[in-house]
Image (cartoon, rainbow, N blue to C red):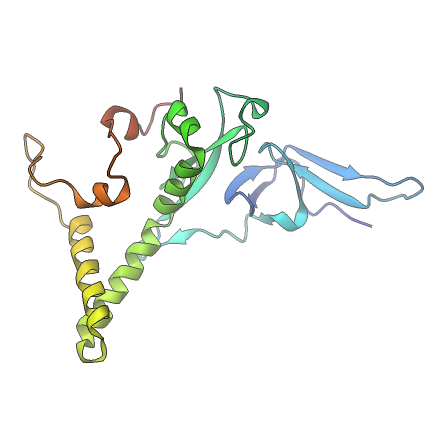
Length: 213
């Protein structure tokens, strides 16, 4: 027999999707002759039903934290331009990823709907990279600090990794002087390694506050 472990309107973490959601319906599965349901499913508005083992209560939040207490995470927003039946090729039909970096689950970083539909799995991977950027930053800092304090214990390969990590940290943490024009004689190495053939549309790729069209 099964009992409901969560209730309607409760905020839960959906482990297979990696996002927070609100339980919209509690759906018991009954068997003839039994007074209690054999299983209980939960509809959280993400295109399918989930079992209790796939959900976590709000007290167990798998957030990514840095030393300043920031939390960067993926939330899934409803797809406003396509129904779940029209986009079954998407990883989670009927939704798209948004990366929020503040305390509230609204706003955040996203791409236009048409761009997401072209290659949803690539956008999902990019969302996971961004949401884990603080952890990667911390890991890089620890590597550089360890090698700096113990250079005699590091191999040539590790020293080279630490040097590359230090250069990356400088690119992220050091602010350049404001410039009236973009320098184009030295291409940005980070963008090149991420997608050398991509055409960067600043108006769409950095659209933070606008709703997905």
